[in-house]
Image (cartoon, rainbow, N blue to C red; front, side):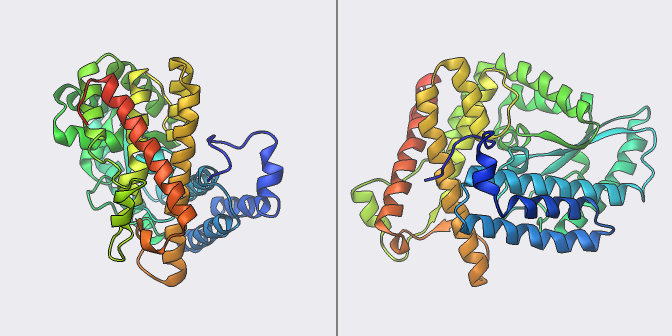
Length: 364
């Protein structure tokens, strides 16, 4: 089980956690920030993944590891943006590059694709958009060189649909919230986790403030999001289901069936209270402070971080063996202890889903 459930180490933890590694993390961040060319950033990206696997093998908890990976990836992306921005005429444009999805939640693992967008303001929006799109597409392809796959759904800043003015973003979000159709709910799971990554952060922060208020006042949409969050239900139980899962051919998608139920539920809980946090554990903790549910949330947070650790372990196994990266656990190859931990964590996933079902009077 992970050692901690907080988003950030406490004041006393860095000495214990990072001795022998924190200098390497700092040195790698400096190397990324000072890289003179995209090709050098790409080389440092390999070092970032190797460092992540090294920290995982040393027993670092997933909550800390994913935060470190996300922060190093932030530095990497910021450097790519800086290197590419100087080649483009972006004068007269206030813009902010936004991280979405797992990157927006500071929960990137070592196997991920891109989810990003642009928010901007300019006197001539269409002219600015065309200039930003040319710039953004080059950044997207540079990120791909660094190991961040191009998004299969094209949710990237280089897509005109996701390069919008502040007013356009408000209109887009309002349309999703007010219609609540399947596509809107799908986009909500990615776009509602946005955060400023580089540029004029105030643009993204103002959008977050507006969105938090807008969604909190629309319980029907929150109910629809809750209903959508209940679709990925864990199916691994402690007794008869477990016997079925131990068949050699069975696989378990720990992201879809284990991790996502927590992040999806935490998103709804945070939005229901108008909270601005984006990471899953901080959303849960922030919600607990407003709902007086600290004890319940501790169990949910521990379970979420435990499943993230198993997910990272699987990715490390794929990396070491040279296999394609995936999120598939193979129960038949797991120890009895690990299976017990996964089962306990999935019972917590069912618990948080039951909370949503009761809160919004939904069937499970």
